[in-house]
Amino acid sequence: MSDTLSRLGDGLVAVVKEDCPTCQLVTPVLEEVRSAGMPLTVITQDDPAFPPGLEPVDDRELEISYRLDVEAVPTLYKLSNGSIVDRRIGWNRGEWRDFTGLEELGADLPEYRPGCGSLSVEPGMPERLRLRFDDVGSTARHITVGADEDPVEACFARGWTDGLPVVPPTPERVERMLGGTRRDRNEIVTDVAPDYGECTVEKVAINAVMAGCLPECLPVVLTAVEAVCTDEFNMHGLAATTLSMGPILIVNGPIRRRIGMNSGMNVLGQGNRANATIGRALQLVVRNVGGARPGAVDRATLGSPAKYTLCFPEDEEASPWESLAAERGVAAGTSSVTVFGGESPRVVVDQQSREPESLARTFASALRTVIHPKLVLGFDAFMVIGPEHARVLSEGGWDKARLREELQKLLTLDGAELVRGAGGIAEGLPKQMADQKIPKFHPDGLWFVHAGGKAGFFSAILGGWVRGAGGTQIVTKEIRE
Amino acid sequence: MSEEVLLDPTNEAEPPLREPATRLGSLEGATVGLLDISKARGDVFLDHLESRLTNRQVEVLRFRKPTFSKLAPVDVRQQISERCDAVIEALAD
Image (cartoon, rainbow over all chains, first blue to last red; front, side, top):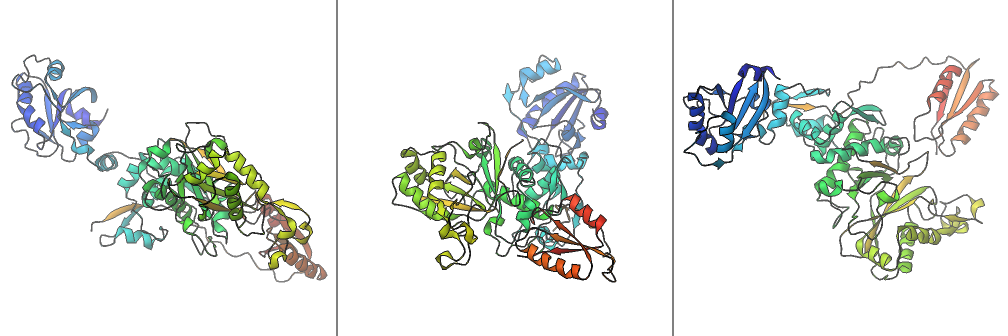
């Protein structure tokens, strides 16, 4: 019940607009209702003189329409004590006769005509009306930008961007973004390192707006923020490190298709809005809420393009193998985000191998170079296996587990090759390890994702940041929508 | 262009202004903490400092963070603040 609706009193309320042929059509019907002595209030959304002779209530501000939750005009309501009892949308002779009890109503009119969209539901309007007529409970600071200031430049000037322009986070855009989650805007998601700033759902939404996300992507961004802000993932260390790694996001499950992510051609490249903006939104949260700015806490010697955004889904449908999510214990049908602290992708070409054994040797040669060919066990890696390479492996009967097992064998190295000075390279392991056999990767340090375009015998390696409790650990989280 | 309102994307925190701790006038009778943040060879540097300080009859206490990539645990910070008059932190590779 609202005061606005109470003021309308009990009885019938018709909401119309002049710019609607069906509303024009029903004008004589509304006159019939009024002539029959029924209490009828007519609300007009555009022309305050329409319909003539029916003393319409001017609702150009759309507050009444907002309170009545009008979707289309005309809509005929029955109100009692300021509450909606019932409604009929558009013109339907039989329905309107039942609704009013007037058996001859609209005898000259066609039986049915659909209505037109209400002005209160035009794009951007629901958010604007909610902000105008309700207290939405926003707790973020509202900053007024000067009349002559370009809002995009204002975001740059305040240090909010990653170097690329952002979408100015207006209250309307943030309101629309929050429509992408059922979570309360003031729910605290986590503290974000390195400043350990308190991060609400609203703060994530603001940064998601700036990144260019659509509202349906917000649950993925929220989950990614939760995943990187765990002690295991260690966003603090990853943000501050002199190395070149950033948070990489891999999305699994039904949400990938629903939000239009690209797992096919150019999967790791530009061009898909969901892929591009989800990863960017996470980075903006880390920058703005966490306070990790390059040259300040972010001490990267070289940095990486991956620190703008690196987010992609697995191509589960065309994959011959179980998904990354399944390997990490996520139930089928559940969407998830896996976060990995890693560097930009590096391509691995092998256009000749048609046997898994041969292709695995190519992969092993390339994987050995992760971080340094002589450094082992300290760094994990992901491989994005392209469909043509996946076909070679699967036709040879290899699944992900077999590939991992064979690569571990191929990458169990002689300590003599790895110690300091070996190969004429000072970098390496302590000399006392020369007699050992040492695997390049930890048993759970090598992961595979199936993705990419159908043509091309290519895969990619994403090398990781320091693994373990003192560095980073891969984290998988289910997405709450 | 009309006036526009933007929502603040930051954590809105205003760091409190802190005065630097009072400097020690001398090391006489002082207890000095040496904090190793677990960077490679930080211990070499701190061993050297410890021997220099001990030679001057300064009491030395050693502390260590489990990893340089995370904040020092609260108990390490508390012990340093309760037991030391000064602390030297080694950032070294």
